[in-house]
Length: 216
Image: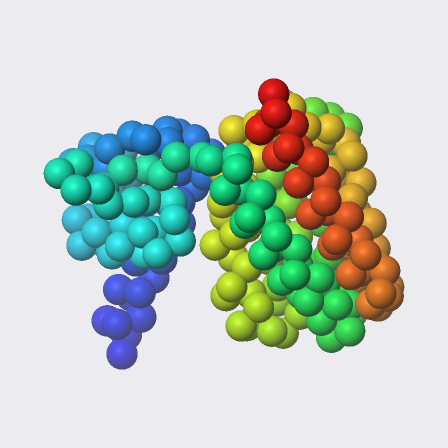
């Protein structure tokens, strides 16, 4: 059992490492996957690396093409709009569930993450902004106690995070931070209807950004 747990942890570390490289665009869209290069870059073993790459083909970060092998998937703004349609429904469900079910400690953490995003935006600190954003997602997902919804939304969140890294310079980062804080406040105060409205407004903000990218 211990050996199995260690292997799983190694696989998760490999997945998280490669995912971060893709999401933050250190591995560029359209780039081929070269195992030897990734092993040298990350220090990962070949087996956990291959397991991580297989998982990534299921969430759309990596695609397999005939005669080309594995490549990093492109970022397609038009397709991103349909992704956000699905994310809107899931985020509303998760926000409502978190507002209803979160424990007091999680409510405090959620609120702190929202404030952290606002502070990072005010300081133009993209790294801390994205860290706080990811932390907010994780604690809200824990608070909602709906693993099926979380399992469905996480691949969409990952794709949105990569889209944000590609086009954040086109966005009003301070507005985005304030929308996240509004959501965090509603969940922290157990205001279910307000949390749903805040989640809806946040996805609308992301849709507007995507439209600007599409139409130039």
